[in-house]
Image (tube, rainbow, N blue to C red; front, side, top):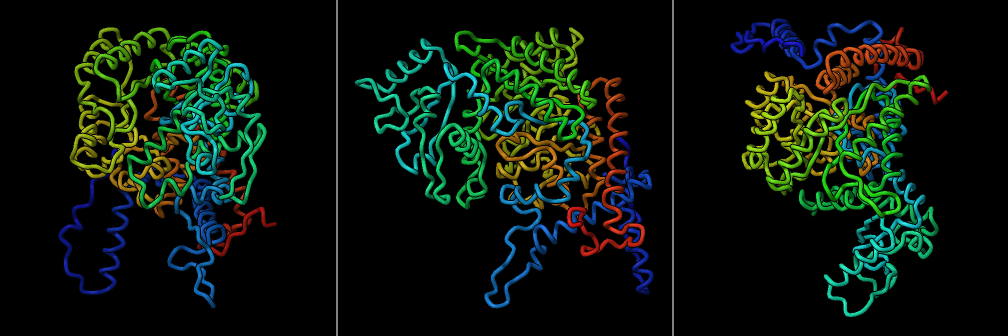
Length: 599
């Protein structure tokens, strides 16, 4: 990472200015001194003429969207003269979930989608794709896909509030699962198997095929929309899978409450994900989705634990973690070949071995040892280790220090490169056990930090992150929805960037947020006036620099990315400069630009 100039001390003891001109000269010099030490100062100083033009054009596009898509900024919203009512409710940088349908129509999002993003370094593998992908996969195994509900679906409230899970069973497996549930609940007689019966026992398994045939519900809360048949069922399930703005930002919502809703969604996803054919198809679709989003390389985080192991499609056998790695390896190799044949580019997808922070010491030690064994067998695929889950509810890193130190010793003895890539600091709490994970991550030489939201309140740690070249895997949309900031303007990213802490942009759990990595880059741009196209460039460069690729692969991918970046900037100039009047108008006021679609 380039070394930045230290703050200019000459301005600390300022003289008394005798004239306004002297004052204005000193003021301009002070502003320039700060800009010279900004996180994107180097890319600005070395920008090509095309990049400079593209940067100005993107600023004009952002301003146009600000006015024409959202209306005026909050201080100048259009107001109806007779009533005083605000005519435009949504503003740029407002809640992502309330704005996402507008965002998807903006010119700035079109630019973000086109942008070559470098490396995607923080994305959970079970929540990369839109929910409809796995929901539709469930159609393909009608004999063995089963569904259960936390309550009988006998009223509108139950349809809205129930929690759904899926699993793959053969006849013997589902009979055993239901029998155990009946015994645990001390059910005196065989309950009704239909989820739509008042006599249904919560969490009892019903064949998904039967569920579809019996499902018929009209949603009185939303224009009496009727859901029925397989398409109606899948639409209903998809809505349950994604967060709504109301539940994420309800005035009574708490950190624990929103995480409970998040965990319900991961439980719903688990059964749709945990059988062989779906996992294979998902792997290929995920890589192709990365390509569609102009990502050149990715490191994904599957959760390696016994309850997440795969079943065969017939529900009769289990596949262990080595089998899962083999499926991933096959999927990566086959899909990279397909992408190359299509004339497109994707460098690689690697795997960060993850395990829950709810594990005890023995289970964590076992996972660390398995990570080593899998690294030996899939050295090109395993690239790091992490523990994940809600920090405020799970164990802190220091609980596992003996296990982590033993792991590092074994890696060194066997000449294995498996860096720690810890989730930590994903909290608003400061000075307690939760944000204490940041101290442990630094001492354990974590290569990157997942989220690191609390670090903005730890100035010494920020300096250590810079000195040790530890990058933050920032996940703006996820942080907003999980309660760390109400809107993007309050996110910690601008603080970290102002202090030159290296950061990368990531989507985390896009399935549940109606988002993609392009949406996170969009939010970063719209959430801070200081962010620019060249700021995006620095973030993308950092993502490649702080990836787990070896140096040879990193050089190769960076060279391809640079070519794509140059083509991207030229595309911006070619597509928008005539409409913006760049050659004749350098002062890009908001009214000067007309999008190509308006012709």
